[in-house]
Length: 162
Image 1 (cartoon, rainbow, N blue to C red):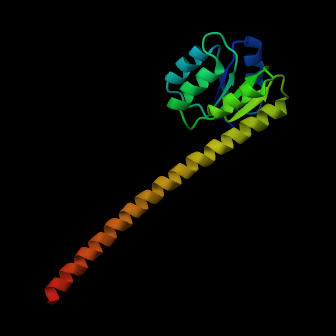
Image 2 (image 1 turned 135 degrees about the vertical axis):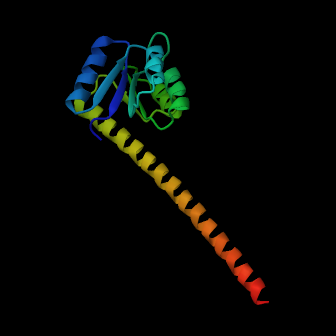
Image 3 (image 1 turned 180 degrees about the vertical axis):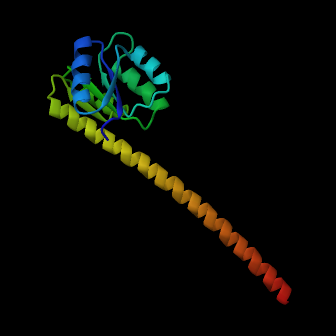
């Protein structure tokens, strides 16, 4: 959904600016962090981020470390890893640690926006599914209680007729 807040994490100012410019032009809200540690601080503020785009290679806390910590605290938030490292083992490590997708620099605007749309749609469906499941569990609990009450009423009626 357009208008959702996205956290962009990269230690290169120019990359962050370009990515945020692309996202803003597409209607998304963008917040920036210049490092993994900075990103954790931004996430700790309690702002509701629908998605995080993170560089893989950063000074203080690399993208995999940030991904691992983010997935613990915000398991529903998709993370797209962005890197110039063309190594399949790095991509696999990111995916195994919970990354939704993996983009290689340089990437095209449409490639970025397509990955963002897919990630946000997946998140929306997961949240919708969780709400549906929670509602279903509440309905089952309520119906079970109604059934229990009906059974008690039937037992009392049976006892009275005997």
